[in-house]
Amino acid sequence: MNHKNLGLGLGAFSVALGTAELFAARRIASTLEGQGQEKLIRGFGLREVAAGIGLLVAPSRPAAVWSRVAGDALDLAALGAATGKRPRNKAVWGALAFVVAATAVDVFTARGLQRCR
Image (cartoon, rainbow, N blue to C red; front, side, top):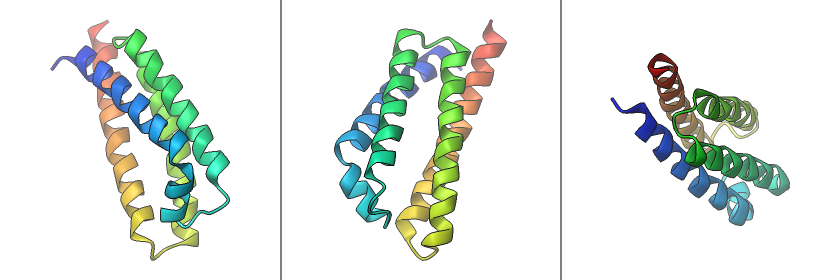
């Protein structure tokens, strides 16, 4: 398994996801029934873009991937709160499942990069 390539892929994914959060914050908020949370979503997008750039610059650096894991924790906390407020919103549950899966990939990649050092 080439963890450096995974890091590079995660970097590109982060930039794309963060860009979507920056430019489609209103639509994301509406889908998640979180109107009024657009600034928070844009902040998460900015964080995601920064993490992605860090990975594109240094895809084999474990700390760059661990920064994504820290961001995932923030995302999970926000989505966890949203599930409590909107328990019937399938988009919230889908987003939560997506972030759990992304976190698993991030942790796998970070641990693999640490072993390669």
